[in-house]
Image (tube, rainbow, N blue to C red; front, side, top):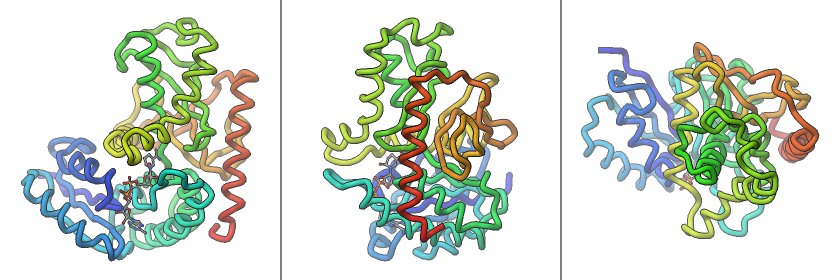
Amino acid sequence: MKRPISIAVTGAAGQINYSLLFRLAAGELLGADQPIILHLLEIPPAMKALEGVVMELNDCAYPLLQKIVMTDDPKVAFDGVEYAFLVGAKPRSHGMLRSDLLQQNAEIFAIQGKALNDVASRDVKVLVTGNPSNTNALIAINNAPDLSSDCFTAMTMLDHTRAVSQLAQKCGVISKQINNIIIWGNHSCMQYPDLHHARVNGFEALSLVDDAWFVDEFIPTVQHRGTEIIKVRGQSSAASAANAVIAHMRAWAHGTADGEWLSMAVLSDGSYGIEEGLVYSFPVAVTNGKASIVQGLEINRFSLERLRRNETELKEERQAIRHLL
Ligand code: NAX
């Protein structure tokens, strides 16, 4: 029997986790032979609801789930964990401004960054999903000086899978036949879903679709998909977000295939001219658990302009929460 691995999940009584926790417990992240311990963090008013979720997890009698820790204390939640899913935050509701979200959620990630710094495994893999996820990850990194910044990423994988799905539908293929889409920048409506390097069944994507579709339909559809889901479903994306969380962490834990990548927001090292010290979504390849920004892709003027807009937006977000860095 393998040693159990501890996984922390914040916002455990929330809607994304109503899908995510059950998939983790079923072994979708680490495989069918890897026992896990779940550390579930919530705020006091949500502890009762969390109890209900834990009752349901127990009722599933998952063979891999060795133990569940329920807590409202980040230091208990992150104690010794090798994976941390920072999902808990106040979600954006209909009509809420991103700037409001930024201030309301920033403090949470300062506290959680400090707690991770104090008690998590030194190799912990942290995925920030709670919005605004890029800047929340930046806050966590800055509050965890003893952990490598390589331990922290933020999620643009849902944007990535949304983009794959849009292109697959347009080309009449299945998603498996699409490779190397990139989401650049911020997980916001500014994000740039880029098809210049994408392939459909091995063919260049932009040779199969016309420019007008790429610029006027594909880009805005992906950028505004989250808002559209809220409009139609009445709540923000949940099951698709949980799916992206698993896909992101699976790639980080198990690696990417040769020549392939996913979109992941990581601390910029200056690649593609993006200012160092911003958490920015790049094409990322993973080898032996190390996520690296894919280098050397050609960036034309159209793309460069959009990369810059994202850099500017992230600088503005950083400026708004500078007191927490
Ligand atoms: P819910 O409101 O359903 O759940 C959030 C949960 O977090 C609640 O149960 C709340 O009690 C808890 N929480 C709040 N503050 C906490 C704290 N300090 N510590 C621990 N738990 C805390 O939201 P849900 O739909 O699950 O979304 C969670 C977050 O993901 C939101 O910030 C949302 O905006 C964000 N999203 C990010 C996405 C991305 O691609 N990066 C996509 C999906 C999603 O919109």
